[in-house]
Length: 99
Image (cartoon, rainbow, N blue to C red; front, top):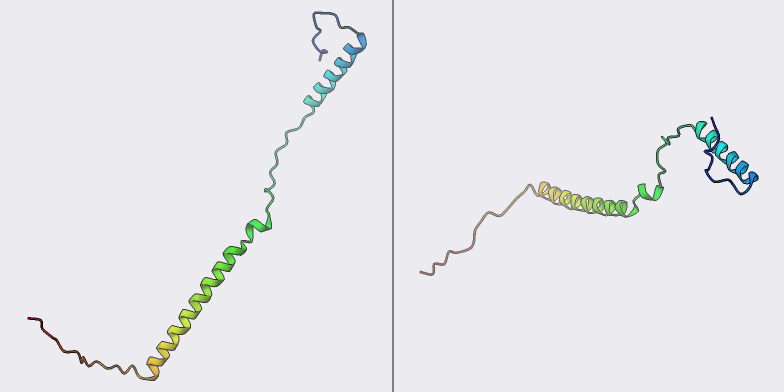
């Protein structure tokens, strides 16, 4: 490897030229020894994004409504089964014609 390309105009100081040359050589050494780096880890997960309290509350309320409706329906079915499903099928209404 050769050094940094020399400028066409003379440097104000030999010390400045050596400082630049050293910085350039350090840079070239770092570039040559650079290793590829790819982050393959999973992204960070935040608990408050996975645990949705509002959704859990709404789900609990929905299930409680379903449980209540099921209990009421079960009571009605049990009542029908207890009374053997006796219904009154008489039609007491009279047909009144307007003609």
